[in-house]
Length: 391
Image (tube, rainbow, N blue to C red; front, side, top):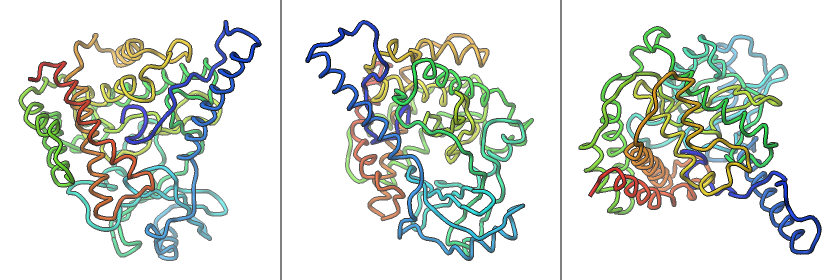
């Protein structure tokens, strides 16, 4: 989702020390105290989704079987193995695998009934392996297992990249100068991803290059219907309008499909992207999908309505200019169709979470919060569609 994950509540408060505040006085101190409390709450929300926890009972795996497989398939592996679960994430359950010498990360498919084409960990493994060879910031891909007999589902193992994950796009824990640098790094990294020729890096058959939005609208329509738990009129209208108003595709690239701040690890001390995570939705397609998805962050809870100048965060116009310059493309016109599409797709994702709650396969204890976002997202998508000319 642009900005926070669906259902995550983030603070809109400024957390830098604004110049010109009236020193002293009870009312001034009260505002300071209130603002400080909100900022601390925002930082705590970052911490809520960062780090590990004991493996939930429903996500337990055969650790001895996993250790034996790693001994045979992961170069340099030496046990004993300790398994923990990451707090964040609502799709593919993700584990931290600790050994005396190093730590790894494992991503596996959820157990139980799954939607068609969802949770394709084999595709995640393939794309990070290919991009890693180009020097793009991803985790090192160690090994893929498609044999369900090992732990009950397909999975892959990659390197554990130490660094910082930011869940709140206002970056309340960072000084103003770091905020802008973090945003610039995020935007330029996306432009770099879109610069690769898929054929040249071994991903020429990673997806169908043409008609990207047509295929995506069809996919998310089917996914939504497969998970539908209630009738939402705006979704019905969108499923008719979007396929009849598709924009022309100008470029083909690898698209991440879920490119946002909390899907990347930043260097521990520098405003530099250490690794882009969560490639489950990646494919070949129109880079405008990734780019406009990124821009949605400015129009949704997280950055919407905040004082960007005071925070020293680029405006949506500045973000667009940064990407255009890095990607070497001309200025882009009206984006309301793309915003409608991206919000429609998010509604499909959150409805999928609702379906997994119904089926008992949702991977996060925050899943109910995400599922509750479906109706507001559908309404927001239809509002963008109307700005783009929908009747």
